[in-house]
Length: 181
Length: 181
DNA sequence: CGATACACGTGAATC
DNA sequence: TGATTCACGTGTATC
Image (cartoon, rainbow over all chains, first blue to last red; front, side, top):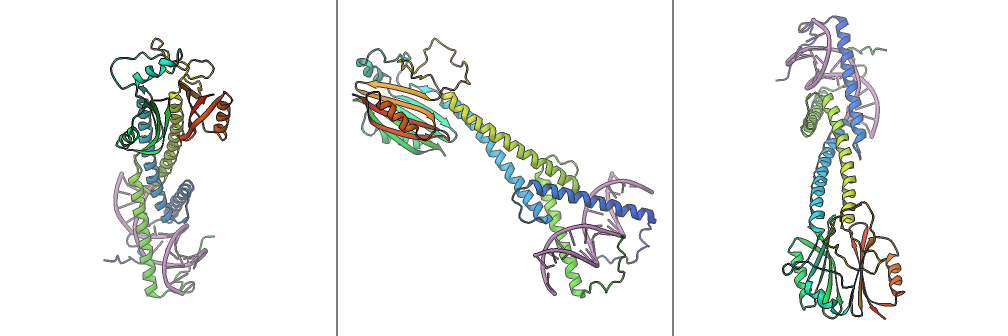
């Protein structure tokens, strides 16, 4: 079981004295190199409390895993964000059919309201990081806010803030800020 | 210079035999732990060619530095992307002209001209009878709301309602409803 | 056969 | 003091 040391052991391996010194020297060099690497490693791992070899290795392992995880998240985030900003930037006129002619109501105020109402609801969305802003300009109707909010929440968005502004006689301007879950 | 081994050396350190075995055992345990850590470390460092301790340490060091650099780049990229996505959303709503048309006319397709141009703040206005809605998407700055409100009031507008929504890290979305005096 | 790499037992230092 | 940690010289295995 336990290896009985061969004791004085010139029996096992004969070594010429010059070679023995080489061996010692080589081993010394190897240890030196390892020591330097340990120091180098410990110098790039932040928040090292204990400096013994086992701790340095252990913390280095944890740190590497942490970095890998962080990179993973960052890369996912970057891809998602690119998609979001592309998808959500446009302004939609979802209702009815074809009509895409929308000129300003700058000419007159009278029929402006009517003209506006024909295009309702008007929806705009923006994205920045996890935040999403949704703006809806629509006809004033009871229960429309609750309807919109529940709709938004069903999209896995957490509503951070919302405001409803009455505008004119018959329209509402709803602004919602939500966060992606 | 070269340490003459004290030979049989009961002179330097006396050790009871039970303790001697503990010492050996403890050291064995320590080495075992170190070995495991080395294995663990080498298992999470990709592309390891040589598996000797010095190489594992060296490659781990290089790998950590690489990860750190990558994270640095990704974070910068992410921030830039965030800004870009915000900037991309901007449209021409320059307060200068009267025109409040918010849709680029369908004929012009050169919407993506000098995209680097900063178009902050983005301002949009609507009017309905006596109501005026002003929406401003701008950089987050202290005192900007007061500034805007006083500016609006100086235009003979009575502010009916206002909301300020923080959106993303560095932008504000201000919505104001006012009435013409 | 060198050269290289490792684990071992051991003495010493530190807490 | 006892427990931990280290560096050292050494035997040995692999290429």
